Length: 223
Image (cartoon, rainbow, N blue to C red; front, side, top):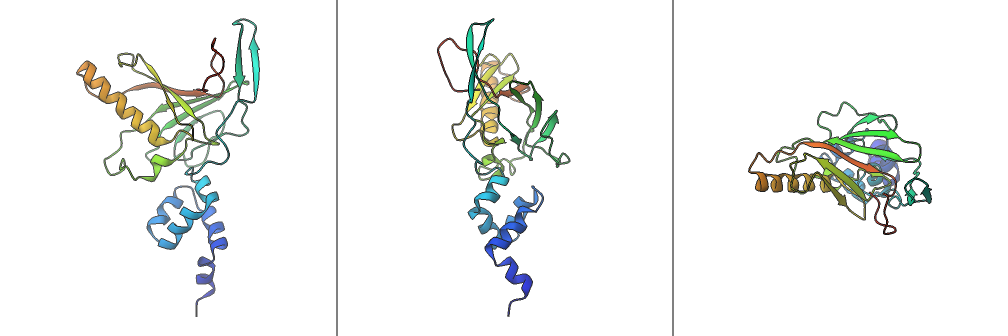
């Protein structure tokens, strides 16, 4: 006969609630210890949302337009409440500072500042991963940067780069850490081919503003 404890861990609804109370990083670790827990995590929409592996709502969209009397242009504003930044990253900023800052190898370093009409979202840097960590099947690659998802992130990096110092990563389903990592490798390879110098890429800044850029050609994808 199964013990009461075993029955609890064999009941989907109860086990789901227990796993939701685990620390963020532990939810990834327990998948390697028990097939039942791994199966439940893969099936549970709410757990996957809390792990930033599934979107919690639709990607961010503009909510209103504002006319700039000086530039004579219209900007679409975003006022998401709230934007949650991925707990796998080190966060430095005025808002949304989660626990877990002691994570030894953050996936990125976020900088956040509240500019009243928009939220300035920066990625200050990304580490160089070991081969086993950077494996194509690694779960961190599928992790969204924010909840709800953002669809574009603007890179700014060393000025000698062939892209001229800026490029935008766009994913209509939500930008992931894998998107950022792949773009960083692509830029590094191109930099090495063009300059003949070391391909290690130094980022000056990677940023995403939750507002529409000024444009004379009407609406375009936000970044």
